[in-house]
Image 1 (tube, rainbow, N blue to C red):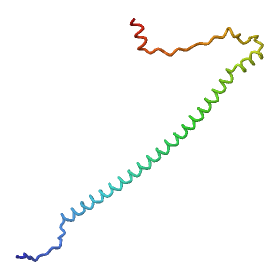
Image 2 (cartoon, helix red, strand yellow):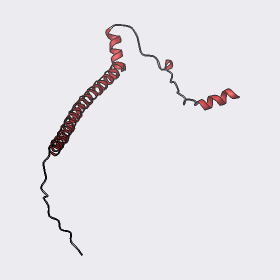
Image 3 (tube, rainbow, N blue to C red):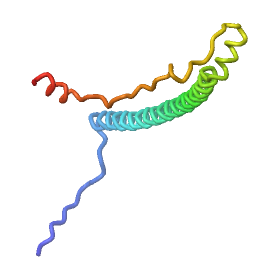
Image 4 (cartoon, helix red, strand yellow):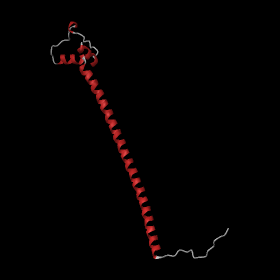
Length: 130
């Protein structure tokens, strides 16, 4: 096997075009690095912005849950007050207080209503079809 050995000068010669292309190469490398830095900064800012939005939403949810809890307590209090005001002891006390002269109904005047189960629309069609 023969080896091809040549002598020569392998040092790079700097010509005007080579110098210019190395400047452009360095410039494009700098632009790529700058682009990557800006991209990382934008991603970081987006991450922080989203975390702030999540924290604000969680705070709003907690406030809404507290408002719902307070509304439910108020609703329970109003139901209790309605039951108290609709009771016969309260009504009879108001009758005596305002001297209305009303009396409770006698046993013969009281009737009970029987509620039937609602009829489905299919049953209504069968009755109408007869």
